[in-house]
Image (cartoon, rainbow, N blue to C red; front, side):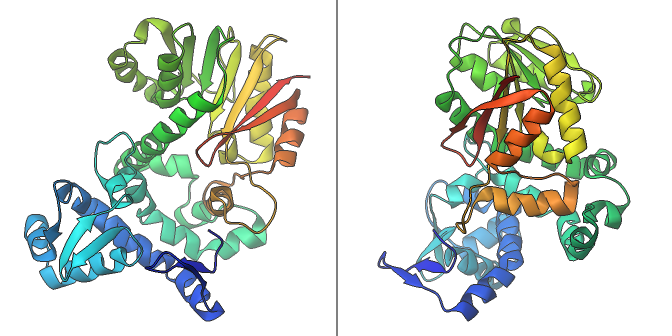
Length: 348
């Protein structure tokens, strides 16, 4: 829904006054903080079996009853929970996504957005706007992934969040893209194998190679074994700035290229081009920013890329230009049911 519109309780759409639009935009951090509290406290799990009073929820979470009520009332006003009777709350389709361990859970994603490094970074956003350099490095002294390596709790939360988000995107990619004429797929920067596992499970003829930093790639072994596809998947450790494994028909990179500035993004893509045959394909799973003023996840994430990582979300034209410099031509953009698209490139 376009910014500036709201859904009334009777289902009709109304336009908010400009002052209210600005007010709500400035209070996004307030809503996010309340959402993180609810995720950390496991409120959605406590409501899984049915509605409960805020007093009961407070007792179950060792919190102050009147204070917890105020948090739940705020979130209910945005549809996260529902106050069905005074002081009594029920699950909604949105809060169901905050449950732990479900296939479509976004609990870890919400917890990741509540890490303290984000408000510190965003408070210094002017540094990024003036210099084009990530404010996070300016604030904490290291690049984002180096920061995670030295802050293991935050790193664990981030990895879990990527897993949560990746499960939904993976299913959308499998449903949207035709892998029927592929023999071997190489997942570059594949993490713990969420995407590659989904692709192999959905395509029994396929073989896969998962490639990431050694300590990351090793985490995929358990997932591949539990999914029953370990015999069809090799796991390789290495640095994609140096080289990637040869032998693939398709090289896929999911939410990788947006992390990096143009120079390093082109370097990764060139390594893929060097590893693949002339008949190969490159697939980038990324949020392609559309034209116009409509809200889009890519526009929001682009601000995070600007301030935190020094990377960039891109338009179709920008991806076409990037691929061309790396030795590819853009052959297709396939929209998925998620905010992500599959950008297909072929050797030029």
